[in-house]
Length: 195
Length: 148
Length: 208
Image (cartoon, rainbow over all chains, first blue to last red; front, side):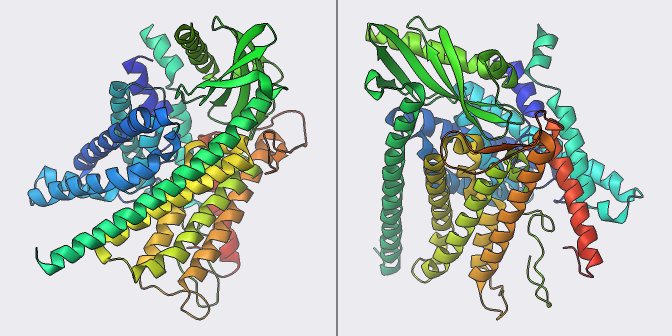
């Protein structure tokens, strides 16, 4: 698959939140001001985690026929390492962007988003550079979906909805419709676009 | 070395050893399950288990193992493909020739799809099937090259 | 999420949206819902039983990594057993089986084990609370799977062992196969949460 196909596919048709359901529930989490920091944190943590798991899965465990154990090594080695890195970044600079990225990354490390994207990428038919691009874009695709859903939520809060649909039901239905729209942007779309 | 630092180190080493045992235990279970999975796949691919042997683990996301089937005078290869689409998934047995060409496709089971009748229907239901079959064919060609 | 004064326990999925996103992705049939729900319940209950005794033995600074390692090992062990039971269902649940290690229910159980919150009729049992939530999660996962499959495919797949799970066909066509996609799952769940709110309010209780 071309890099353009990977970028469009992982950001939209195979969106981490809307297609695989990784991460937090749409609209359940309030979006704060540090959207840029969270986007960087998502991209960095996912890329590092996926590169680690790709190496463990494809170089170390795969040839031994123990590929399914990759997640154990991931939780034993990569999670503490990523926690250490994100805390070091958060403590290094008191108010700067790096500190905000570190704090966001610290929250992200133990969660289905990072674990899920890392597993998906390491067990996919990707080379290492492709895996890095896919994980980076997956993180950004998740961020895009949450930002769009956050904007939708603020509009829905002002709408006159029937009482039972206020809050999470309206958000879930909106997420479903958005997932439907994202599904259209897949490999076939890229092929017809790029030739 | 100060006593508290030594105590922390001993504590950490004890925990590392316990986690090491945990990894070994899970690895043991994984290997035991793997041999069972091979038995299930061989019976799904051929009726007579003595004609089939495991030749490799290509590490592909769609199939874990590649088998060589020596059926009398003819030799072919077999894989059990795991296919998925946005709404369903299925296990499919594929037979491939020595030249790396698809000879046949048979649906083994599906958890959330109407069972398609033939290879064309399977490929149309699962968009990634063609790519997975292509990778299986490539794995066969590479096995033949390394074997000859 | 905790028990009310009258003993009413809110549904973790429909009221608290706990572990709902993977449910949307993988709970597409009764069989998938049951096997995923069982795994989530097994991991949460096992963590609830194992972690508290460990707290007396292991130092505070090592508890978080050990809890995560245990959670991962339990999820992986369950995934391997599910593969033995039914390779088709295990392949269908794919990476979501090892991901049970960090599912909403498992992380909730870990949080509950590290908090001082009490639960249950006697106000003491933490494990009791985890068990009740886990069973409710299992039943809800099975219900969502069965509903999606019945309405979407017109059939019902039972979680039987072997390569080909037993399927009961009601009609020959798939009336609304869109429900089996993630987008259909999100929309169906939105309606289920709304229905749950109406039912709970009709019973004079708070929805969440």
